[in-house]
Length: 238
Image (cartoon, rainbow, N blue to C red; front, side, top):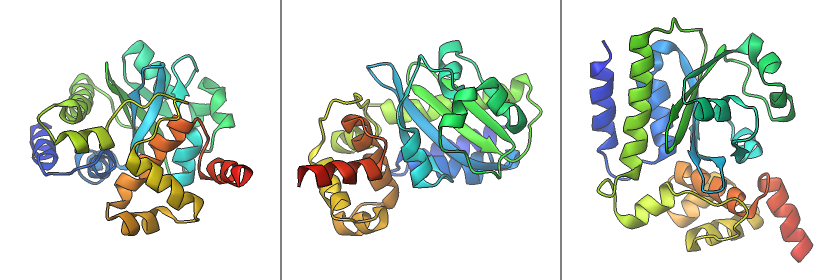
């Protein structure tokens, strides 16, 4: 039943230069479209035991940036899925009662009914917001897990892309390390000048999804909550 979807995903991943955010978009519009998916969010497990965002689709930048890195020690759907190594299927009406910490974070857009998190150990996890509550069975669960592993194995493969592309689009970022790549330093300067992500993409000649991914990595490396804090710190230095 799901074989065609898996084959199509593999074919899509073979295209050169695909980013995690672009894959998230493909999952929503193609792989999980029959489940009425509305957004996708991917995180990687960092060396300091956090879940760091590496790509998203269907979620506003300000919401994704505000979430930042999530310590595995916190009680969240993403961390529980990884710690328990099992799918987390969370209905909207149960979200705050099961995870009170969600009150402290920017909300997921309100057009969702179910939050599905698929762990892909030892790499990370993928979360999908769905408009409906799917009837979970063993076949569907295996399909979702297979999709997750295909994606993460692809981006971890030494043969899937040139070294420069692999490192820029998928690398474990150590929270608070302060270490930025040359491209991330350039993006940081443009953010400080007031450039938006689309403007930065035009300026440096990369896709907007790659710029978004790099800004996530910047915020993690600098241990800040997002663009607003970055601009505030920049003003303090000037």
